[in-house]
Every structure is written in structure tokens, then in C-alpha cells.
Image 1 (cartoon, rainbow, N blue to C red):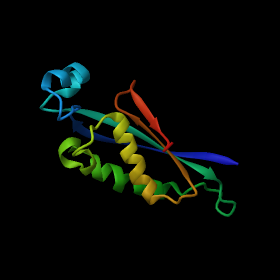
Image 2 (cartoon, helix red, strand yellow; image 1 turned 30 degrees about the vertical axis):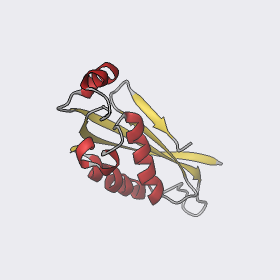
Image 3 (spheres, rainbow, N blue to C red; image 1 turned 135 degrees about the vertical axis):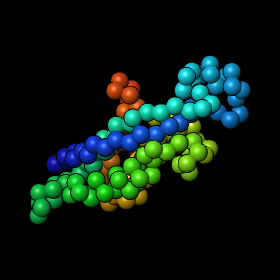
Length: 136
């Protein structure tokens, strides 16, 4: 029997959506206000789901304290109050869209969590705009 255990978190970060190889005009046409050369920020809401089997010994899927620590070290400490384009290594050459941020978060957590678990990352860029990534 598979079950999903979730942990919510949040972080604040600035970014600019643009391609270095495009003109400012084309970036503005494609990315709109999100292409502001002086950046803009979001209050990101994050839900990390771990999926797997309940441990018959503990009754846990995973100790959520462990998941909390991984989210803190791999996401909050790494991205909170940062300019994603300038201060987060993965985005030096990768456009920090919500989609790409979710994939980076998933990759960082995947390295920490036991392979027996599946992981799903839901990232809210705004209360109405969010993406979900499960590694597939």
C-alpha cells in the first residue's frame, strides 16, 4: 500500500525571466513584466510529497522531521531571500521559471532521500499559478 506524506514550506526570492541570447524587446514580448532587468520577487509556497510504503515497525512512511531538515538545507537555506539568477548556481545558465525551480528543488531533494521513496514537488509561484514535478 502506497501513501503520500507531505511537508509545506515557503521561501522568498527574486528572479528575472529572460534569455541572454534574445534582445530586451523579445524577452519583454515573451516574458512580459517578469523580464524586468531589475528583477522582481515572489513568495513561493512549496509542498514536498514523499510517496512509498508505511514502515510496519514505526508506522511512518518517513519521519517528517527528516524531510523538514532536508527542505531547510536544500531549499530554504539555499534559495530564501536570494536573487536566483545571480546567487543560485543552477540558474546562472538556466532560466529560473517556476518549472525549472521545481526541477532543481526535486533534484536537490532526490540526492538526500532514500531511493525507496518517490518524490513530488508542488511549487506555487502565486496563489493561482503553480507547477508539479515528480521526476518523470
